[in-house]
Image (tube, rainbow over all chains, first blue to last red; front, side, top):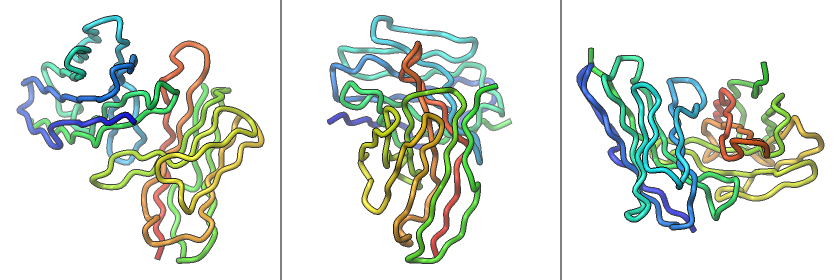
Length: 112
Length: 114
C-alpha cells in the first residue's frame, strides 16, 4: 500500500523568511497531491493541491512542486507571517481511490 | 453555505460505555470519512462510506462502527469505549463532481475515555 513520509516534523522560521516542507510517497500511480493546514482547535483545511500533469502550482505566497520521478512533492511558503503558524499535512490517494493517506504533519512556527 | 458539522464537540465517557459521535454534511457529497488524530500519528482512517448503505473499514477500525442511512449523516459508534480511544475525531466528506479528492473536514470531537 501507499506510504507517505513528511519532513520536518517541526519547523521554526523568522517572519518574512521562507518555509519548505517535503513529502515522499511510494505509489508511482498516485496522481493527486494536496496540502492541508490545521489551525489550533480546528479541522484540516485544503490550502493547495496539484495533479500529476503539472510540476508546479502557485497561489499567492504558497506553492507546491512535484517531482514524479523521485516521488516527492513540497510545500513552499514565502514571506511567512505569524498567521502561517499551524500544522501542515500532505496527503496522497490511497490505492488510487478517493481515500487519502496523510503524512504525520509539520508544526510550523513563524517567529515575529 | 454548505458545511460539515460534528457533535458533540467535547465528550467525556467511561470505559465500557457505548458512544456515538455525529457527523452531518450539507454538501450533498457521496463520500464520507472518519479519522482519529493522535500525537505522533497524524490522521488515521477509521471508516468510510461511498454512498447510502455503503460502509468500509479503514486502517484502525477495531472497536468502531458506522452506518449510512442517508447522504447527509455518518455517525461513528464506539461499541465499548476504551482508554486507547481517547483522541480527537474528525469527519470529512468529498464529492463525485469536480475536485473529487478534496476532503472537507468538520471541526472535530475531542473524546476522553476515563
